[in-house]
Length: 342
Image (cartoon, rainbow, N blue to C red):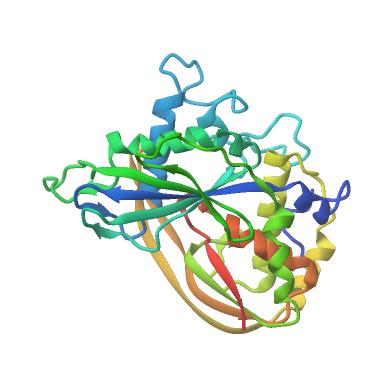
């Protein structure tokens, strides 16, 4: 079956060149609840909304003529991180204005009530040029000390009073598993700088998966779409298509990677990978959109799928997905998974 959505990505580069250009930085944030804080069952939307609003308040000035539609993403923290627009000179996707956002959110696995002193941990991967604005992102998360997060457990019914939190620590997570603290509340010195790492460092461990069946555990709801319809049980071709599309788009639009690639042979190799077992369930919920002022339905599958032997050329893309997620809604924390040899 032809790969829909990737037909114009032909010639002018290789998938390997695209991955070589891709780079990102991963920061781990820990908030501490000052009073009981309630987060929804799937807390990614609440954290994303609070982060985005704080970033806009801090760095989108009230007199900005493009406040509703950022036209200067190269110099605006909010525009670069949240408002990813297709550059006019881009080689692909000429009919779309917005492209894959330059960050992925690693949300807590579940919400609920966080008592005073409890830590609320989440991570953000900043891709390419968005990583240049990581000090702005840390400052935006610190602003949650004033704005609050989620809902205060002391709030009156049907009110939106936020819960009080403080930013306790920020760590830069390195590809080799090393964590370096770049901010600690009350510590002298302020914020220490961090830098993005190339995809090759993040994916170097993928070779250990070669020659073995792989169990992929989808930790948060994952939404893949084929032929305009949600995929309920992803065969490996559907998963590989989504991974290659996301990786090459992030590389091209945010890291200067090649835009037209010969990926069809790579994806054809995915056709021979069998599903050995599947333990998935479908999850549906709604999130509140402050921009749209309405509840928005969300959905995706969660659980485990075990696949047969995966071609070596596709293993680095699986490793990228472990860090940057797969499918729709990555900025809400959707599409997170981990890979384990079976």
